[in-house]
Image 1 (cartoon, rainbow over the protein chains, first blue to last red):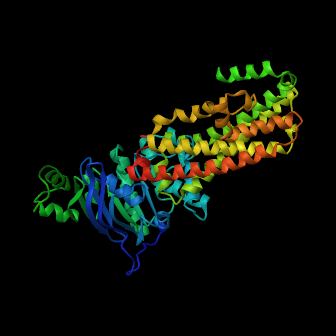
Image 2: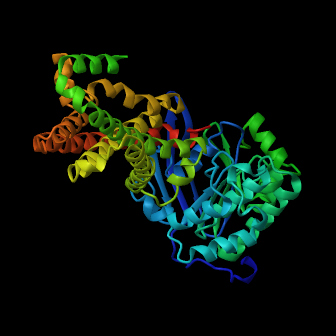
Image 3: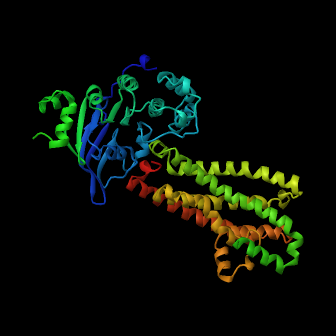
Length: 257
Length: 229
């Protein structure tokens, strides 16, 4: 369980968790991601912010190897994702409200299958641990397709943590959740990240969530990173009081000079 | 209609068929079911992932595409056996026809038709990856397009000459010709079995190549995350 874990710190010589260089993805004439470069140190939680169509999901998909870039380089944990992605995939994971688990399998069956896919050593123990941690005991025997949105999100989160990922990519992890459930998820993620020393890249439209959880923020607009920095520094730079105001400034007027 | 037209043509022209037709037809039905269930079992495994929008999770796991394909083939085998064994037993109970009396060649026929179902499933999967769920109906229909030229219930020489070439270019016609050879007491037609095996190897390689190209294209176009939405 998370409470019992010792916080892990990466060795000082380790490669960054994520390194992206000149990443570009075009769909016909549309440049969905345009010469994006960034680095995420191990153990950091970084927010990827931007309006609809800014390129967040495209960037995450490329990081996961689901989408091939037009050009550029992507490394996760020092591994080239374009050439050796299978060496990295077992050490990372992701969750998104737009991807679901097989509807006709129970929560326990889904978690068990994914535990096997990730080569987890003691599958039953790990599944039981996640069911307890994420408060899924009441629905563990229920078919995944019959769950509420909040329950599905918790199950998806359990699946994304099945392999204790060193890098966790989350696409709108609290979308369409009530404030109480969303807060519960955020708290759980903060505890997980602290306990495991995990790196988290979080794409979200919820500015309060990003402000609370993230060490650093990448602001995307029209496929490019237009600004970046810790939430407090961005708020100060734009002379605003919240990250949401900064987001609206950038969305309407572009980045500060 | 096409199928039964050719069956009628054959029965009218060959009286020996009438006396043997019962066993030949029942065996044809049962073996055809192997191909149908083999293909559908493979394609449904893929469609179930699409329907539940699970492809994104699968392909960010360390599961490699060839492992996924082997899993779908295994599921296809299991589903086919679950469907076909009770049907074979019912044929014994209700019609007194024991398809297992074909003996060892039945294993070869079964394996050839199952593999044919797999490469058909591979090509259907590749097309759905490229075209989306709009191509789903292929999974249900494609086997029936092959039925008239598969010589299930009549020999290949009933077909027009041009269709005979087409029939012999596909493994099922060789399997069903082989089945009839055994049932009519002419022994195992090794030539047909070897032809079916050779053609299956070639088409399986082709199906695998088409799937890999389609998978690469889906990764380039972003279809793996969008499918099922």
